[in-house]
Image (cartoon, rainbow, N blue to C red; front, side):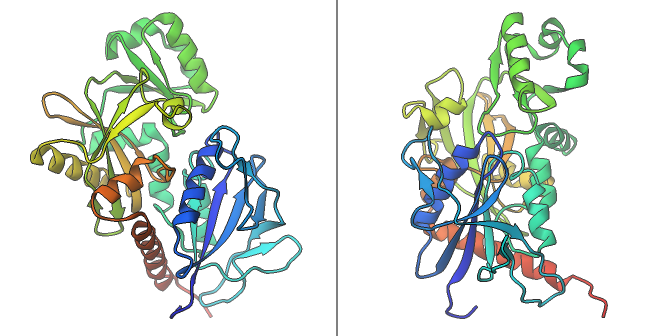
Amino acid sequence: MGSERIRVGILCGGESPEHEVSLLSAKNIVAALNPSKYEVTIIGISREGEWGLRHLHHWLINEDNPEKIALAPASAGLAVQPKGRVGAKNAIVTTESGITLPLIDVVFPVLHGPNGEDGTIQGLLRLAHIPFIGPDVLGSSIGMDKDVMKRLLRDAKVPIAPFVSISRQKSSLVSFKAVTKELGPVLFIKPANMGSSVGVSRADSEESFIAATEEAFRFDDKILIEQEIIGQEIECSVIGNEVKRASLPGKVIPSHTFYSYEAKYLDPDGASFEIPAILSEGEVKNIQDTAIRTCEVLCIDGMSRVDMFLKKDGEVLVNEVNTIPGFTRISMYPKMWEASGLEYGELLDELITLAISRNKKQESRRIVRN
């Protein structure tokens, strides 16, 4: 590409309940991309799943209101057009009228939750041979499904909180009494495939348990019931493909009962943060090693944020991973890297380089028959 600017497609919005979070993240990313290095194209996906080209200088409505932020009307509908054979120059993204856009060099899928963070978009981009930021198809799928994720970690001897998973079909067979006998008196119930604490509830009675399971099943056909863990809420950012490195950890101190969606995105006083977390050298190393090991076990490359609990006895338990972590004004992933010496713009530079490098290796392995 020489001295030409790299063309970056920002894919945001989407059909997930995390639509607004995606737009908030994308807004920050667009503002941080160096215009002398990058030419940005906004690809907004509506709540109905329609892909559209947005004007770079007017692509958001109510952009300063986390509850009302929305995509501006599209200037054209978009579709993905696979490149086909190696070296083909046909357009990656085209309008529905057939007018092609300039070739996009790399896509940043700033899509949180289902149909964005779960391997679906990643599979589409792989089929189109488009480089993209974040984990590949397998790592994205595993990272999104908390049940599969936890079973793999458990098999690999990575410490996790005790849990049970329940499908909608078998939910009538599960009782509060039976689950508390196995996991303890306080439970956390969450959809297996969701992020940003959407659909997550705390239950300490039969009434709250019933309400919590009903809420979780609103968002998925499989839910997790987890044991309450008493400890510090610690997060750690990871970056890299074959060779990974971890940031200094950060600590979340919620002012709510737990770190809920409202605490994360709607209440400006919902939580305070200690970045970097004040921990011993041994605790920091244990957390960083656990974060990297978690990504290795789950086949997660590119980037991720690993959320953990640090108990009083020093034990670290993995809670979950976020394969497309938030990039909002208060998001931990970029803030932990900043505390580790990697500024926001430099972080984006590295993520873009990692995506393009991985794609080149994948393309070099393609077998083409003449």
